Length: 183
Image 1 (spheres, rainbow, N blue to C red):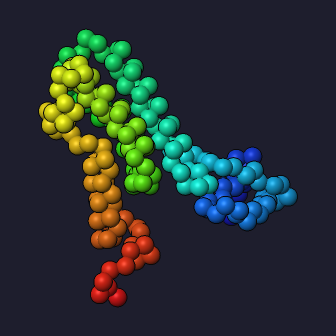
Image 2 (image 1 turned 30 degrees about the vertical axis):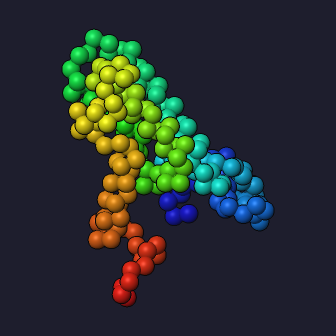
């Protein structure tokens, strides 16, 4: 290699992504060493599985977001300013739930959507300092000027599509979408 960088074989893995019941499996080597085959791998904060199921990733981010929310609830008990609580939620919790949703967004999984949304439901009760039944989730969202996370993900998907369509990001959209009358 020109840059004299060497691959660390122990850090290199093979992940075959397919939905076939009996995929064709090949052994891969680097130099003379076999690469380890895995069923899932985390890269850039996103856990991808061989079947492109996002359950493991969703479970991980929901657990992490719940832990952060729990720490906030325990350490900020005397914090009464709603805007400060909301800022803490947006920067520390929601950022975990929304990271790279353009990749893993649970469009076909109601269970994943519900688990992710449940974190925001709990967070909005904490931010508004309300107990169950005092304000509906919709009322809390309106008071905080927030969207349900399902809508938030749709907006992020549309923004990504817009940026792709008008070449704000380097994605050849013609590989993924065909337009009527588009050459």
